[in-house]
View 1 (cartoon, rainbow, N blue to C red):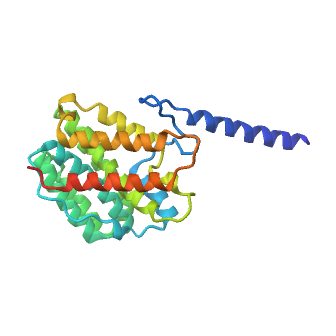
View 2: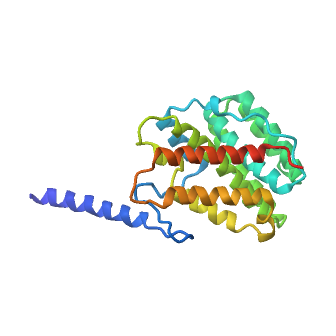
View 3: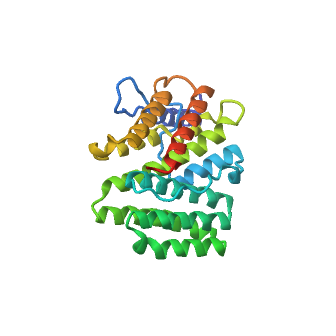
Length: 268
């Protein structure tokens, strides 16, 4: 082997070893292990949808959800739905649909008011609606992210960490519903790992949910969310040596779809 070939082989071996080490991340549940087959890099919502769109050649408009119900007096439910509407805004941004964006933007205004954030966040949401109307898509993507961050900051200033965590939970539940729907319709196994984006995504969702106060986590709706998160994580991480199965994708789609439907129902 000539010197340059030895150097190339050594570099490839080092990269391979690093990849295996990155895959060996412990989880909080016994019997679960992160698969080296599935990527472990955390993604932003925009990055998550970008990768999905390229792999599935997504027709985003077919994935839009109908308008949510009138905001519930159950603040936990309203926070989950608001998070899912933020995810919806990323989805609509991908589609470049200005009218649908403005419709969803108005729903977000209603839910922010219910959570006591209307006056503080209203100028930002109105600006987002105007950007969509003017089709300023590049600027709007950054604005969606910064608006989400501002919501989190405002809730924490109000000492309502639980609602901030629930908004993030609702956002990623909706993104998993979108991803599993897209990937379930693709032939072959090459793109199945994209259903969850990365194993880190699932672990962060579990960690985030576990930080919600125990009292709130005992409510019926959040018990359903907790069950869905645990079942999905177990489904994807119990057989780390195997490629993701079609069954895992279909079960994820069913679980996320059922949960989103419950969240979307008018609360009592």
